[in-house]
Image (cartoon, rainbow, N blue to C red; front, side):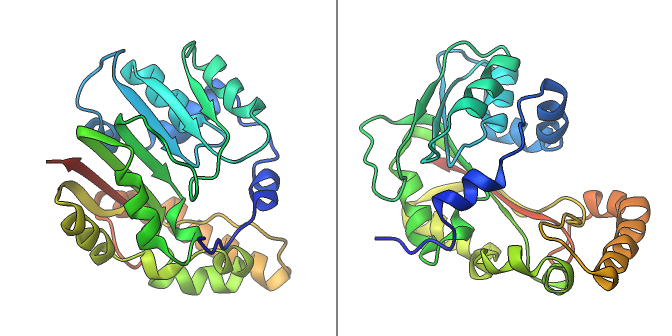
Length: 249
């Protein structure tokens, strides 16, 4: 049994706001368009996509709409309303929702594209979680893993203003070597591996006055000055994410 750093209740509370708005979904997901173009090799309605831990479904819905894929959401969240709503507002009529725990669920189906976003870092045994993704890959299938980067200066910032959120993430998996070793274990080709995005300014807790000042100061520096440069020159110390894309040989 895998030791999770979060609970089912944590995630049902985390996404309590409704995210089923087409403009919001497009804004959030289009930020990664250059990565999606590496991940998805063609626009084909017959090709399948599954997202592990896919709630609330916005990435799945966006990709299904943009690339004409048939999506499946695997998530143990008990509420499917937002997932179904995401598909509906993005005009995705054909989809499947599997309400199961990924750590114990066994699937007999393989998929052309497999992805997870912000998933493996919530487990102590992140290597095993990575390995389980491969079970879903079809021959010549592709896998995309996106996780936050909370090492380097980001860790210091989070410690000051977002410490509760920091505690439910396993920072040990936030190293490129983890993904290089994973690819080697399973004989996967690496199509892309690197840091991505600007500085992660988001805060998930109530802060005191000093913390608010720290947050606002960083917001001024990064959002209005440095983030445009960071997006062009990703950094292990300051960028918000690690993105890895693999292909089965």
